[in-house]
Image (tube, rainbow, N blue to C red):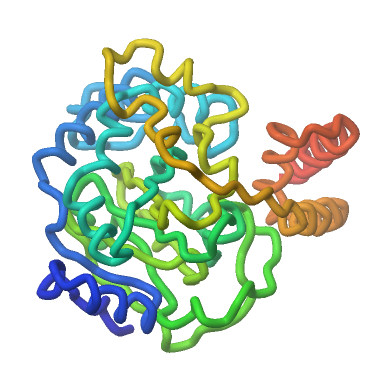
Length: 337
């Protein structure tokens, strides 16, 4: 497998950065963010993880040794309880506004940048390879303008055991690919085989991977004994359409911005996106409707790959009948394992 193309030597050349990301669908920028800022947030998050039983008792929280008895995944209530505590940290939200990130996108776009308030944090347990994030495209959940870019970065050094993220270079030019329900974040997997288009490099604290919303990417399994912490921030031109859901917390509907900001001091980060005259584009739910339909059929036949979708239906579907059916199917899957 080929490594990521290192674009650190053209960090200040907006035209070349735009050329590369339009050609390859991604940019790899080693050392873009200061390690000290990331380390401070990493330790804050691990203190919360330790309190909530995700870090093994008797070990220093900073070592991130996982307590597998605390294993859980989004959107299970015990996962969301811990995630809500993390999501309330002002430092968590401030990171995506770091001048190194925003300045980079200002050079790429050559105009005002909208940083999506819907920031995402990921905590991945080791030894649960079946929940490794499947190949997917971020456009399906993000929507708005297709020219939205994700900035993915680990909060600490990634050893081979901690895994990371693979990208299918050039896959952003193929439109929306056929998908199926799957375990893991997003709960849907692109079915196409991209062969030798996959690229991957081991990342260090401060490295940033940027990719187009159509670029297919997937997790690399977290093995060993430590938690992997990473973040997903999204950026677009402020003049282009945005999905209204991208202006809500990632934890909604359980948490509002008022909940997030409750213990913050006065800050320019609060409701910062309201300073823009944004054009909103309604969310097309047909992708998730199809995902859910397929998952319900799979679960009827005992296919455990439907589990992550069923959990999302139970937690988030406004249709009570769908919630009840999904809950019953989850119970049936649990009874067969």
